[in-house]
Image (tube, rainbow, N blue to C red):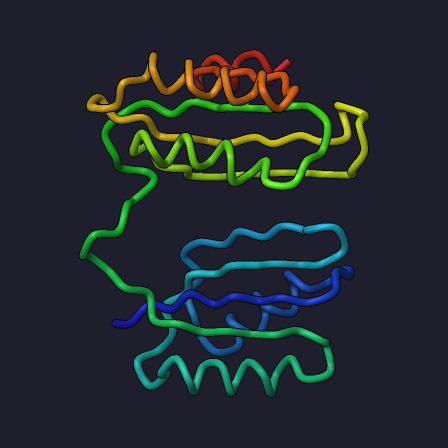
Length: 186
């Protein structure tokens, strides 16, 4: 059976998750994964679903467009590729670290920090960046969840990140995910 990734975008409002999940339920689709976020006032949702065999990506999109017409949502449906060179975030070797930066807003912050992570071959599993602008440090926060495999020179990567953060006037914290979760559970 084919699995599809369904991307839903639109102006945030109450009931979007219900509308999309109910549409998929009515179409007899099994939702296997879902993730959504609000970026400023825009909704972005991602659903991995397995529909009945009669659906193609195009027919699933068309049917959902018809069901959700008038709700101001943009729906995209793509076949979920399996195998190949994709990285499964749940099953890789290595350890997960949380890298957080706090500081004044500047153009290119995400690019500069993610560039260092990428140059060492580490994979960013999740990124949350909230920028309100200005020089008030607590208004501009980035948090990266990064898988670091045994072949990566962790010490050099952390050093490069700290140097870049200092040059950008950012406070940086690097913690193993287990420690981060324990500290933030309180």
